[in-house]
Length: 185
Image (cartoon, rainbow, N blue to C red):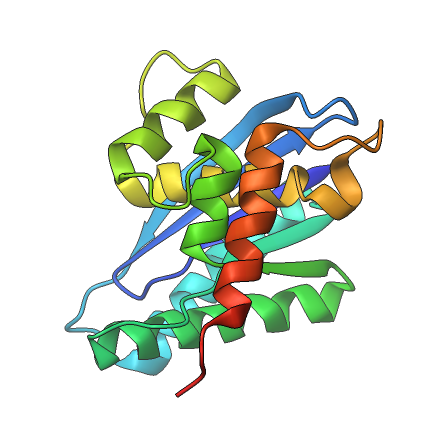
């Protein structure tokens, strides 16, 4: 399965592509961080990011697009930018008939490290280890996009071929269940 992972953001948008085999072996395909200037008008920034992601979809032909879902954030401007980019990516996926998965940061951390509370360095280190990279992808948006793509490939409901979940998958399911139990505001 080929997965395009997106760590949405207006100033820096991490985008990565990985292949995940039925045995859960993840292979690096591509990664980049799309940047736009805060001085550029919002419609143009959305267009620039959409064009670059659309090109990546065309080149890499993913089966699934996975997007980080932010469900709480103190900075409203950050949430708005994240939501706007997420909407753009979902539209691009819908136009091509590509399945979309949304994963919270806690789910992603649990999937790649076994702990939903892992620090960015731990996530980056595990991403490099999982993909056999010699160093942690930089900036963090790139490592996060790779982690999101890996999470989608390891999704317990579709990735397990033996029916048994790994410890990281079990932790991920627990984190997912816990995030759903939190009261909505």
